[in-house]
Length: 146
Image 1: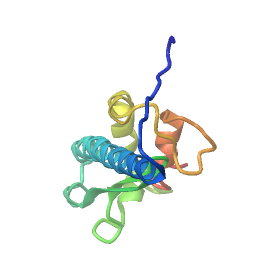
Image 2: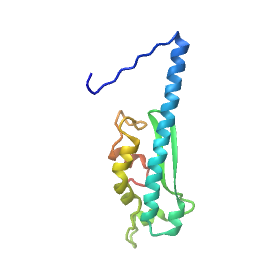
Image 3: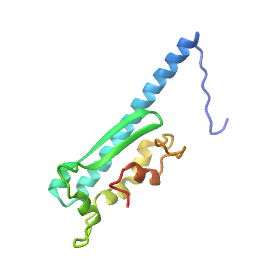
Image 4: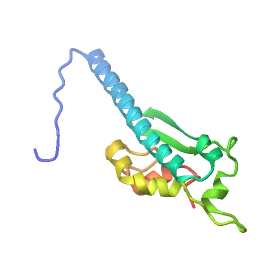
């Protein structure tokens, strides 16, 4: 069987099957959370290196949430309470040019993040789309959206 896989499952009754799938889902969720944390830490670290503001650098953090193997998200960026002006730096204003740090950090780490997170996970509400660059930007929230 080229490019596929098979699972041989031997259980004694419905309870054994339920226990197996429950344990498998738990392990997949934990593995996904670990991979997301690693990728989010990589992007947050790169964004800290890209910004010119010490205040923004200190405010950059990440949060990872895994509800199920197919429903997960990672939020990376500066805390708006600690650095309320970060989006002005990223996108600029009418009177000030942009000093982007999140987008360049994402561009620099894109391949590494996709390699860490992998292809199998599907974004929540993604309609079956695999993890890709477009989904990575969408998963970053409104901060990366234009």
